[in-house]
Image 1 (cartoon, protein in one colour):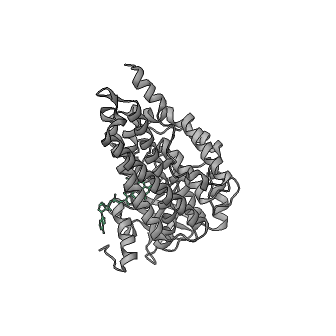
Image 2: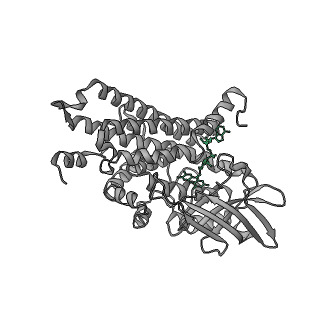
Image 3: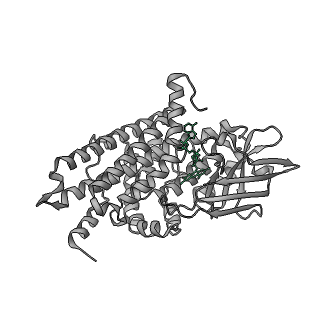
Length: 403
Ligand SMILES: Cc1cc2nc3c(=O)[nH]c(=O)nc-3n(C[C@H](O)[C@H](O)[C@H](O)COP(=O)(O)OP(=O)(O)OC[C@H]3O[C@@H](n4cnc5c(N)ncnc54)[C@H](O)[C@@H]3O)c2cc1C
């Protein structure tokens, strides 16, 4: 039933006011500020009104794909190709932050397509392969997925068991993959498999209509519900040598792709946290209990300040991360620390925001619970918080604690 106070709150939320406490926008170039504004307006206009219903139904909003294509936000600092918008790493991060501020499922769809699938081809493909695949993917005429994780190898995907055997001009791939986003319906799936001859990990572009490729949607997810993650079975899946990414010669090459996406998850975490904090602040100012706004309670203010502190720290992390990438100074361990810090802190912020909203905190109407559930995936994918912690721990102590 409609209630005027709740309706007003609903109208007010999600507008990202008061979330730039340290005047971070002053750090942006004019073009970066333009990107931020464009994606923000798009998200509030096109995604926010439909996010909850698609999330609740666990369906992907396909109608958004051409609209995202028209927005022209595919680009980054090292992918200078026709169809890609020249963009600093901060600009690319802002795209992720703003998409995630509205909805992490849509942001994840975008990140898998661009950061994992397109970047695999960009970094590991030959010039001919980059020209063949990337322009059409930049226009979203073809959508990509990235299949690394297996049912028995997640954190230790370095030990992946899918095999690739060369037969003449073809490769025959066998094995199983678990979790790839977009993989149920996309056009190209970048499959990582171990060459039986030299035991090294190679990458292959598998097309969805390949008779050896079978993808089944993973059901029952309570996080990123719009993203269609798949269990994949590859049975004598034949691809031509042409479809093997020519510069992928070992797992280390795949790790280069993952370094970029850890940076992306840091920005995406920030987007979720900004949204949750913004909603909690607005709610606390409007919600009255004991005859006064709950924002007048010391404990509620303490929660809001704690959230703002974390959001501001994440903003500083992300801007610096972007500038390090643009300056060519980013190390794998820096990306790991940023992914670790931002994903864990953003999950805390979302939980605290959900507390500020009381009972309304668990309804989709107020969005916070969607951000909170979605953060569970962000803490896990692209390497769990624990694995990021081990990467940084090894770096600062010189001791590997992986095994
Ligand atoms: C929503 C979602 C989307 C995803 N999308 C993709 C995708 O598009 N493509 C893809 O290839 N993969 C994808 N993944 C897979 C994701 O990268 C893995 O889930 C992740 O790497 C963790 O692997 P796992 O789930 O097998 O957990 P496990 O590796 O089994 O880990 C379980 C727990 O053990 C801990 N752990 C493991 N090893 C150690 C250790 N040495 N020391 C301390 N703790 C340890 C982990 O931190 C974790 O807490 C996705 C996952 C999710 C949830």
